[in-house]
Amino acid sequence: MMSPKVRRITLRTLAVLPLVLCGFAWVWSYYSTERITYYGTNRSTGVQIAMGESHFASMALTSDPAGWVYVQLDPYSDFARHYTGVPHWQILGVHFFWGAHPYSPGVSAVILVIPLWLLTLAASVIPAWMWWRSRMHQTPRGFPVVETNASD
Image (tube, rainbow, N blue to C red; front, top):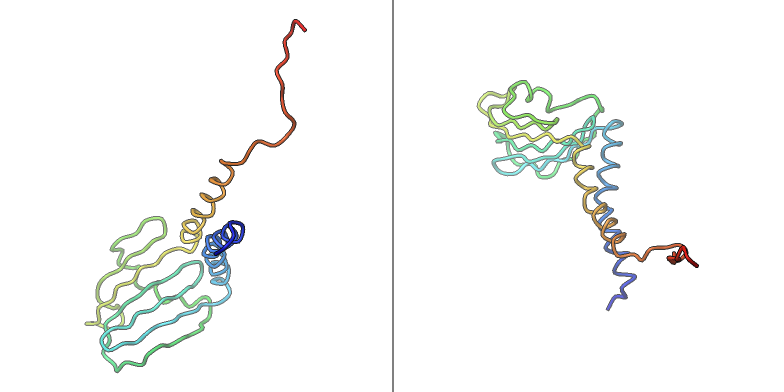
């Protein structure tokens, strides 16, 4: 059985961890482009961070499955830019593309581009709520204020 203090520290650490990881990915995306993709039987599914954005892509395959592939690219090679030429859906830097691959006709692709600032902001909601909630239950600190009568 965990003590309340250890449980509180564990929960706070787990709540802050996504915020730290998103912030690190946001900063790292300006120094390096990282892509990890799984090439399955009929589709490839991958995630990439590049230049302050995260790209989630799924495409139909015409080749044999290869399994997991990790690629580190130049930070200025942005593979999802040519998909955003056809704006299917775009708001606050979030792009959504669904259609034929521009360089491979007949290959269908689904791409979602989310800015890392938006993921970092979303990851900060739970730690901010936990901090606000812990501040709500604290007793006021300072010296006690006692009301005096003016006639005394």
